[in-house]
Length: 315
Image (cartoon, one colour):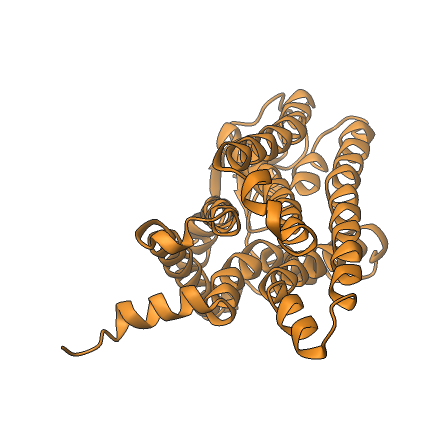
């Protein structure tokens, strides 16, 4: 393997994922919380999809967007976790070059898709609170479908250049990636060329997606807060704004790890590599796990349906 790792390569047939550098001896123990979180992610998001499908009262724009988010979360976590667990359990770090680039695309695409869905959910909350009488006329099923399609197209188009640029570079260094998955810059750093285009594009795409989405969400909530504070009583203000609670919690769970990941990658040059890897895995695994929990606990219709499923009333 050492000869292969230092051979001149144009496109390596495989990369070797090391897992979490410096903690290889603890991979077995680390896999336990990873596996538990992934199991909760799978179970929770499938439960959301099942409940919304089976419950006619939940056939509304907010829950359609929630189903889109659950589907996106399932694909995002499943694109990385099976391979990560195979590294932890069986020390199988080999990944085909094309599979590595495909994984890279899925990560970037569905992260961007999750961000776009949060914008769509913010739009739903804006219309529901600021113009409730027209909510059903504005956000019809065809409009919701078009919004979902637009989010998917935007995410795919912005994510597609990332693996294509990575494939373009010649690779003549070691094919070992000190990571649990094919993280964009961890792969590109192995190239023996000036890869600033990849770096600049990744940074620009992140700003274009996350930056614009956060601005749109902030604008929506500024109008929502104006509408809430114009209500006559404190109880009505709390009750109305309470309908945004689940959405706000999910936004924080999604964007805060993203912010920390961005800061440590760009400015944390003295931060240990294992911290970067753990933070990247947290960003990919924790929000998909938390979203169904947040909506299950805070959304009355989903909570009651869950209780009905797992603790049916005796007749």
